[in-house]
Structures are given as C-alpha cells and as structure tokens.
Length: 184
Image (tube, rainbow, N blue to C red; front, top):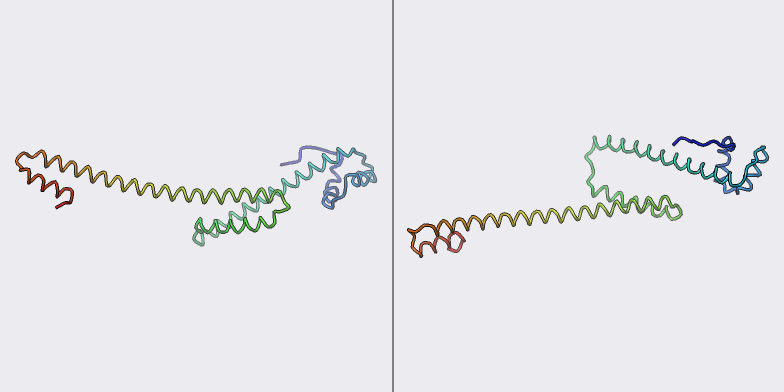
C-alpha cells in the first residue's frame, strides 16, 4: 500500500527506523532530531514510528507474497517435469515446516499466528481425509444395501409369479420357491 500521509519526519524515516531497530528511546530520537533543527512532540514521533513499522511490515508481507508467487510458479514448472506429490507427502512437508516454525516462533507473534494457521490447515486436511474415508465406506454400504434390496425385490417378483400359476401343485410351488431363495 502506498504511503498516504506526510510528515516533517519523512526525510529522517530511514535513520529513525534504524534507531528504532537499535532500541533507541523516543527521547534520544527527539534529541537527535532537535540537533538537526526538527522539533516535534513525543506523541508525533510515536505515531510516525507506528506508521513506519506498519509500512515496513506491509513491505515485508508483499515481499513474501511475491516470493511465494515466484515459488508457486517454480513449483508449477517443476510439477510439469515431475509427477505431483501426493497430498500425504505435502502434509508431511507441512508438518516438518510447522515443527521448524514452532521452534523459531517462541518470541515472534506473527510466526506463532502462522503456525496456528498451518496447524488448522493440517487438522482440516486430516479431518477432511477422515470424513472422505467415512463417506466412501458409507457409499459402499449403501451400494451393497441396494444390491441386496434389488435381489430381494427380484425374489419377491419371482415368488409372486410362482404363486400366480394355478396349474402348479402346492409341492411344485414350494419346490420352486425354495429354488428362488437358494434352499434347494
């Protein structure tokens, strides 16, 4: 996002960010600015630093997005040459990434949030995989049930057909019905 605010501190932004990175206090920054003929209130410098940090974070985020896009393009090119990995393989890589980020994220709230999001993705994948397995099993059971129902309906139709033949003796009817139901 382009910077949309102007400040008398703009010409000193790079130096102020460096001082902020070096953990120099606002009072020391104010003295440094005063030496250069710039007088501002401590609230002004605080506000300016918040904006600069936000802009830097946005820049880093956009950089990560662009590098991620490049990485995605590289991955797509590699996948054209080699077969795509299975989802299980991708999830194993994601698990390794989560473990690596977890060890690095103890002091970084942004990385902790990222780890949380990755964990949600991994859990969602596992949940979806389990649900898909259950749905597949349910479908198999329904298909088997349908085959059994169709068989029973055919047997009932055959039984009705045998019973509707008046020329058959009761013994012949019983014999044919046993054959229909496989009880010869």
